[in-house]
Length: 115
Image (cartoon, rainbow, N blue to C red; front, side):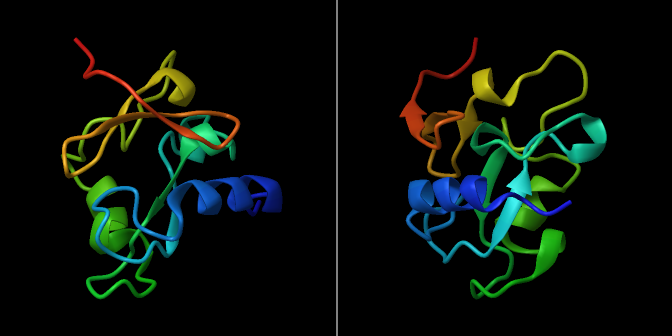
């Protein structure tokens, strides 16, 4: 199933077309923070707009920040485990060290690091 247009539009507006991971490249890929296979959905709280290639070109989930999200040791909040973890309450740490909560309404709210 593809990501609904409403969710995609909200996430693209939130990111402004810039990777939400590094803040340096053009965002090309929608990443499910809690993978669909782990019970994740297409809500804006569960999606991060990430770069997918070294030069900002689409590269799938093996390069750029999208590749980092699928690595063995992704930054906190980029890959949410199965079970009770909820993307709407799980902070996302950018590579610049900012902590954000992605909301179902499609906004990114600053937060403090989890304890």
